[in-house]
Each structure stands twice: as C-alpha cells, then as structure tokens.
Image 1 (cartoon, helix red, strand yellow):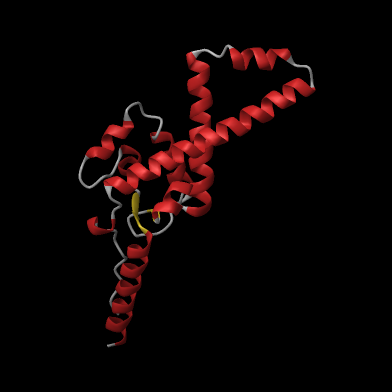
Image 2: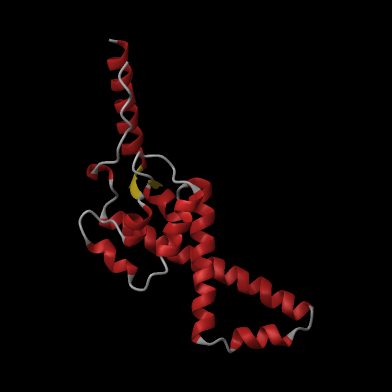
Length: 167
C-alpha cells in the first residue's frame, strides 16, 4: 500500500499584494478601535475609583510605554483571531486565511511566533517581494492564501488521491 502524500501549498494559492495590503489596512483600523475601547474602559475604571495615577500615566505616557501598549494590542488582536479562526477581520473580508505548508490551520505556538514577528521593526518591507510573503510568514512557516481556491485545490487533491488508492 502506497503512503499518501500530503497536500502542499503552492504559489498560485498565495494572496496578492493588494489582498495583503487590504488585510493590513483593515486590521490596523480594527486594532485602533480595540485600543480605543480598552482605553475607554481603563479610564472609566480609573475615574470610578478616583485613581488619578492611571489617568496621569496614560496622558503622559513615554515612547516606550506607547510601544509596549501598541505591541500588546497587536499581539492580542492577531493571537485571538488567528488562533480562533486562522483569520483576522481583514482576512475574512478579503477571503484569505492563514495556513501551514499543508493548507491546515496553524497551531497556537505557530500563531504566537507569527504574531511576535509582526513586532520586528520594518517587517512590512518584507511583504514587497514576490510572492508577497513577509518575515512573519516565512519565520513561522505559514502562508496567507485565498480560502476558496485553497478549499477547491485541497478537495481536488484528496479526491484524486482517493481515486488512485481505489484503483
């Protein structure tokens, strides 16, 4: 009996530059909204408890504090969405999805590595190549692909394997 070869992501499945840019734009907007919501709750909590220290800290936050806060938002946003759905809101809209080399949803650790790589300064430059695959993709060994095309290719691939095994 011949062992089954796993499905492998190929270049024609990879999302385009415009899809990747739109993902980034939508996800950046969603992160700003998330940051705003968190700040509203923190400030409301501080006011309810008459805690001026929190309010003063937020109003006078230095660059390191701002970077730390925004990094936490990035990690929170991408980890929640990509662990739960292998997609962010941007990827839902552009009909793309994060997968491993076999076209499956990545595990939690892979998503964490992927999210941490987004904090590399100037990582966006890495998306300019062909195909558009950034450091957060290559380091974590993940791919952003067109979901519909992926589903069709995988279905065809496994149907052909099943047919070959039945012969």
